[in-house]
Image (spheres, one colour):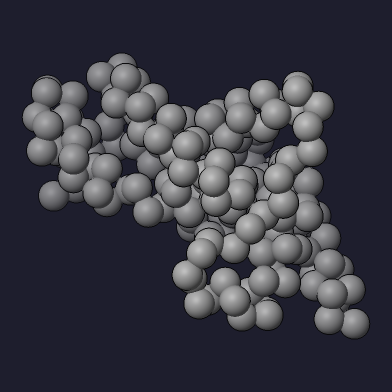
Length: 171
């Protein structure tokens, strides 16, 4: 069953369709959120995202655009959390590897995560959406509310900054 059909069925009140959407998309939403925030904040924000999805799904006019809409909701929740924390003038918590994840323990992975975390939010965001969430340039533009050309320039800048950080950490 397609996401579009699941969305329509969920909009009609079918709880099983909503549960299936959550089952399908929760890992990708959490992964996106985790790449933008640390693990503890990612869990909280992911719950906020799904609450916003449940509340907003009845108003989604184009069920075929569910993926960009979902990541727009996720982006807004991440931005709200970051704005709230910066407003309190606290240092953002450093990214921590997930407990018990053997992949996180690998040095190359750790340096990649550290390099990604060190990128400015705008560049990190398009890099995560494009390469890790596999959205198109157009979908990234829609999620971020920017022109496709800006997505391309941010991707270019993000690749250069990440490459420089990885060279510095290995050199």
